[in-house]
Image (cartoon, rainbow, N blue to C red):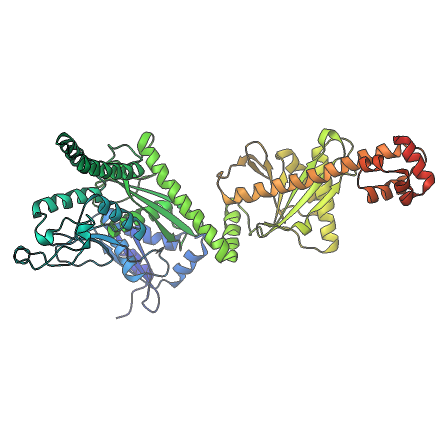
Length: 595
């Protein structure tokens, strides 16, 4: 039977919540998505003009549509997540850490052993986790081992075998790391009390263990058993120290999952904090590779489902930065202030750190990829028609109105190209006039580039607000370059970015990489301009001091400065040393002037 046309498939879609699947001409799955209303959502792919190139390519490849109707939007979210994991369609986001995580196992035995594992065996044993690193697992097991003496052997400690005297205590017993249940030195009830307290510790609850040990310590002290009391005291200290390191929130915040998201052009980072009894017992950041410029609200919803399934979380409340669609029986809290807000901010900080760490790795391992991502981000943030691979920034310097100069710095692929930096002496402007100076230097710079056939930048950055930007635009108009080169102005005080013809400035995020590049440009231009200005003022001061000596001209001054480097050294030089450079007659005039 021939596949019905796309128009017919679209017209028969229901208005119910559900999951849709796009297939290509070879019946290969391209994309899986969820919708509150299947008909509206799927139809939008074929009626909108998509700005993202990948979305346009996806739509061109679609040849058939399948769908599954479900009762609610949250059911659609769960089904979508499962189908993406099963089929891994080309155009769906990629959740980038599918790996085997470590667990802590409490073995289903008469005297249970506790050990790390990456395998689940359905034999009635208990598994706590998964943990995001083996280091965390080892830290917890070291804590447990330092407080509770547990067996590490794999003997079958059945009642019959113990009573028959089959086993003998090992070195662990003599080191006091085990109480010797193999020879019936420890009863089952006491051992299981320890296991119950360990369960609570693994859940983040230290209260019952601390209370038990404090009571024991008091009893031993009253009975004059001071050595045993000291041993208990050390265990209490270990537990309290570990609890202090993990407790960072209000103890009333119990059994809560916290989620936050940080994203850029290509990736999103979702951080997950699990809270229990006022302590963070787990932190994990999921990296998501974007495919179609997905919205943060959709990515976060998908990540919440994935993370809660992966870590088998059954908490009934979650903290998130904005409203998301999740399971119906979960309470959603959007913290606004207090401890709840602080814990959400901590989660966001973890996501940002993971993103920064990833950027640093890319810079080292794949600098081209980092550059491409940065250029794409700047293009988007600054509303440019192309990537700003070549940027030039201008700054004026005229401290106290003297020696007006300007600087032009050049960045290629977001990095300084110092060999292309240029200084300018202002020639046509009398006095300190920043606007006229900017007009002159921009005109001179691009008139020369045009005459010599050198490549023009994709972006010009003017250090200043609307006034300096308008002056620079006049020069671009005279050269016929307006509209051919993007130009912006950056005002110093609030880092306001101005565009031609727009009186309302743009404010980029203070931590935005685009803003950091622009600030770096502006600071480089300022540094480069100020250095030139100071040198010029110094040279002017030196020349004027020597020029006051009758019979000493510019060439003589130049020769002296080349030899002695400064006026101070010229003043201190002997008559003979001066004569070696400029002859005895002129040397006498200078020597007598300073002595």
